[in-house]
Image (tube, rainbow, N blue to C red):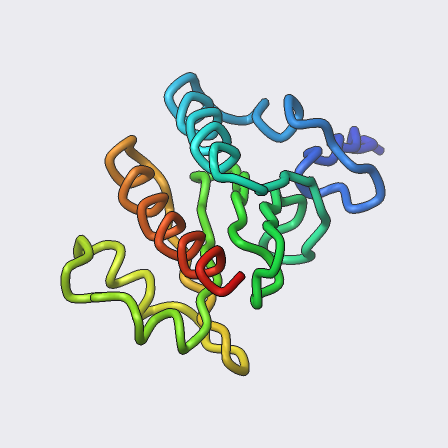
Length: 153
């Protein structure tokens, strides 16, 4: 009888132990690591934004959560370190979407908003991030959201 050697759980999927940032980045190649690092820099560059690592169950598992004061959504943005490809999620209220000139956004950003899952008054818009340009386009939407939140204060 051959016994199977148990495979250690990926730090991203082990809900019983909070991973470090380095562990969450460990499954990426150099390019994806660079994108995750750049995404973190860009998201943390906004005034009042804080970063945390939280468990969000399947499919997000351990996720980097970005919050800012007075945000009407659960969080300003999420960086999901999925092993396949990093993702950014920007929850938007219906009011926020209505105030954005969506037709002026890049097609993949528009598609992320239109394809976002609607829960109550929140659209959970998400994007796979494979290039620096994709990252910059999505962060520009997060910037618009940040300005809207700041303007309400």
